[in-house]
Length: 133
Image (cartoon, rainbow, N blue to C red; front, top):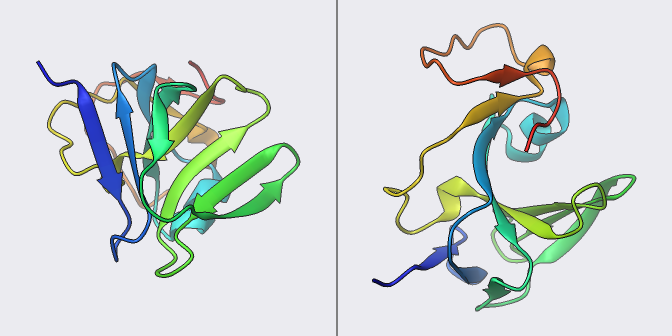
């Protein structure tokens, strides 16, 4: 079985791959992620360091807040990854950038107190006020 997963930005210039299982998959509703993606919420996959690599052009980075680095394509601007000193052993890839997402099974919602009030989720996933691994 091939456990290699790949992803890329809108234009294809920035790409990545990882092997193995994700640490977790979840939907983030925090204001920072909403603004960074111009969406109501975003879905991340947490991938252990050492299991992933950039395979295309290295992304540009932006320190969006203390201890947080957001990576995006230098050409088309697509958000690619999120890293935080609070979780130094992993990177968080945007699930929508994966070529094949069929294996993903989100496990939770987090930062739900910051969620927009015009989205009503119909799943029964656990909802947390802050990040829960």
